Length: 522
Image 1 (cartoon, rainbow, N blue to C red):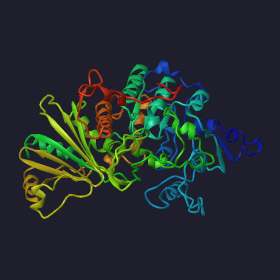
Image 2: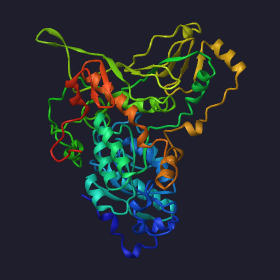
Image 3: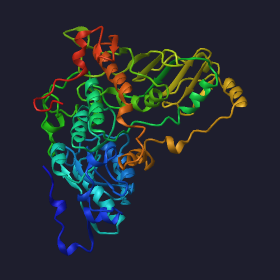
Image 4: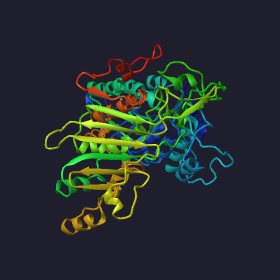
């Protein structure tokens, strides 16, 4: 249900309270929010450049909180609605104790915000409070009334007639469902990874965006500034022809459960478990599934490769013009347990392994030869290159390694500070070539207003965003196929992208989609 109290400001408070419409008009909009030119007339981008983007945030957990500041600080955007199945939760998880609350304190310039509440904030009521407090401060008012709250995104999409865009920041299994519903309403969509945690769901999201001719943005996208020095080294012939790329992550950073929970704790107050499940089949509530933990389950998440691989691999797919892989195989870790005095390996098809490797094979294209990309997580790294041993060094916990015919390039997880190895080879290269420093301001895709500029410009009628959904297809398929291979215990998949089928394992094609709860089909 929608919360209506935010629309009931008393008339005697007009001097100290600013409303949603007054805020939009004061921000320079040429016309009121209800008289925006129809989207079907404007086409891609929808909102005339003179208008603010009126944004609804669907999902307001800890990651959404980390990102809210950059949006609130963007004068072209006004947040007008918050939707979350959590009202004001106490079960969120964070990376450092108090870091989420401290981020809000800094944003609102209130060092005592939520003093005495010793749990991470999150939920629709928190989102409403943050948005309205920020906007009131920005306009020098005691309060601001104009951010509605909803439990059900479907009700939001039906009732909020003046929104022009939505930001989707929910567990993975809801992404495609929400994005498609918003696109069918003619709304711009900015969404976190993945487009969907099933191959066919991600394809449906992209197809809907194309059909509606709507500007979109994938928040994990980047334009590849970090990768540019690597591309220049390879283009200059420093190490020969590129053959392999190895990328390793320290994820998971959440508990990875090897078994399904058997106890049935009560659903927490203020949390709508039924709506959290969304398209997934009914099952009893358990906190092991929700919030940050969702990433570890095939039904609800995409594992470490979806959590972080979208960031590191996106520029590789774009700059190397990679199509979907024609072959994906994996090596998942396993654990054992004792049952009736017998040691047995635990096998399951419901949760990701604690660690794995994935190999994705790509066909030659243009001047580029065939290429293999290797993914590692859970503490697994590739073997230390001889070139690194020569410098008496070892691989960091995260990194990216480019293997060519006559040498190697090593960088950080997203190829930051990439260099030829050993050091002597980098020194020789630097002496003969001009090294262009990375543009760290542009390449910082994780925070601040800059991260939002490309989608804001696109949604206001400007150039298409480099993170538009139409560019996400091959990467989405690679990552979702990796999950299928892991779910099948490491089976090799021969992928027929043209027909969207796993050619060598017909029974595995059922894993390209999910079994939908009645009424939630897409």
